[in-house]
Amino acid sequence: MTEQTLPPDEQSTDEAETFVYMCTSCPLGCRLEVDAVDEDVIEVRGHSCKRGVKYGTQEHTDPRRAVSTTVWLHGGPCERLPVRASEPVPKPQVREFVRALQGLVVEAPVDFGAVVASDVAGTGIDLIATREIVSERERETVG
Ligand code: SF4
Image 1 (cartoon, protein in one colour):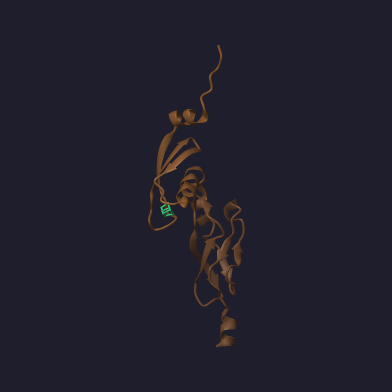
Image 2 (cartoon, helix red, strand yellow):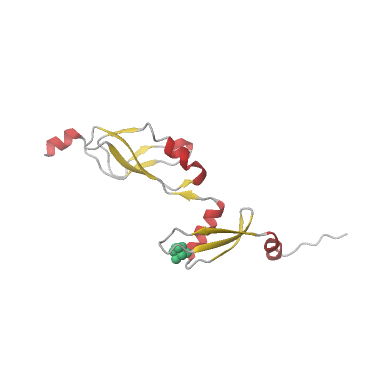
């Protein structure tokens, strides 16, 4: 008996499931329908621009989230330092990433964009300061 191989299009359409995501790349929030066989994306529909195709594919295969928060600051004019992850964090690791920051205390002064923690929770992603902080001593000198 000879084995018959269907063309890739026919194979995947028969087995594909449809997953629904909302594109968050812009405020329009298009409703994306992603046809996929497991992690293999066959088609993305419902997008109003190309970014939607990229977003739908990423969301299905490797969802990630931007993380912004604050951490403790010592020796500065306020108690908390605003920070963000240097790149979007894989969704399953977001909780672990944020938890790893709970005991972190950053010493002032801090430059805008400075890495204040490296490889947070083993993700390979750093933590970046999103505000410049001068130390209390510097402030007294300037003031
Ligand atoms: S598909 Fe394009 S227009 Fe629609 S939400 Fe995404 S970025 Fe905005």
